[in-house]
Amino acid sequence: MQAISSSTSADGFGYGAGVSYKVLEHVALALEYRTYDMGVSSLNFEYDYDTVDALIRFVW
Image (tube, rainbow, N blue to C red):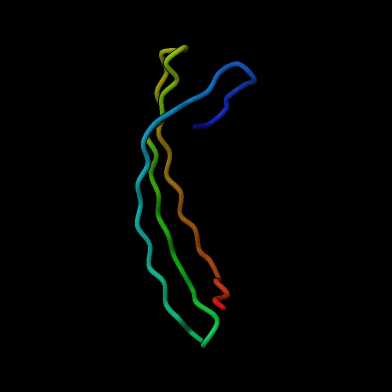
C-alpha cells in the first residue's frame, strides 16, 4: 500500500530476488532487485517500477 496523497492510495503486487555474499564473519554484501505493479482504482491509473539495492549487512 502506498499513499499518493492524503485521500488516494495505491495497491499492487511486488516480487524480487537477491544474493548475499559473506565477506567477513559479521559482514556481508548483498544485491537485491524488486519490481512492483501498482494501481490506483479511484483514478483508473496503473504504474510499475523497479528497484535495485546494493547493501552492506552487519550480521550478529
